[in-house]
Length: 168
Image 1 (tube, helix red, strand yellow):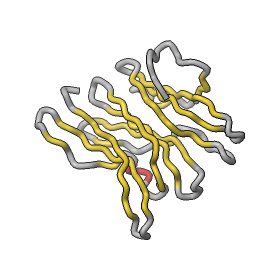
Image 2: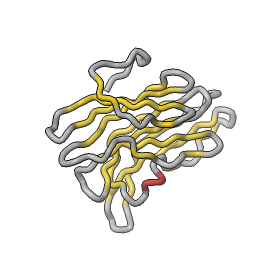
Image 3: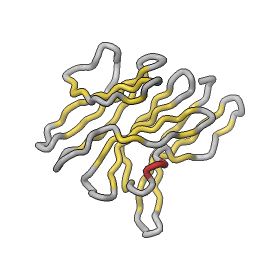
């Protein structure tokens, strides 16, 4: 909104135990002040569980709110990857990250999230997920500005009509 920009990126950090991890970090450009703000963690509510973030995407609504989606490897199990999302609201910052995919069994995991704003109130998240047999599926979740993330995950054979272009 108003020429402001949000950059999101992967930042490598060393923990107190000398373990290298990566986190989802952001920096906001304020066009009115012509300055970049201080870096902030978009995944800040997940401090204790993150080992690695290797897929992420970002999209902004016309009102200045921003959605960040990311796939994270969690500490409990190196093969365990989940999708999370966090919302940035101007003047308030990043909200808590929320897990979007269901708990997985065995070798199943989600990755490569892509988010697209469809209109002033709605966004769609598309992502790949492998099931327990390593079969790949494209899945989707809707986000509504008033109600948040839809509880249902939809497996897609094709894109819904609201989404004109989106590449995984």
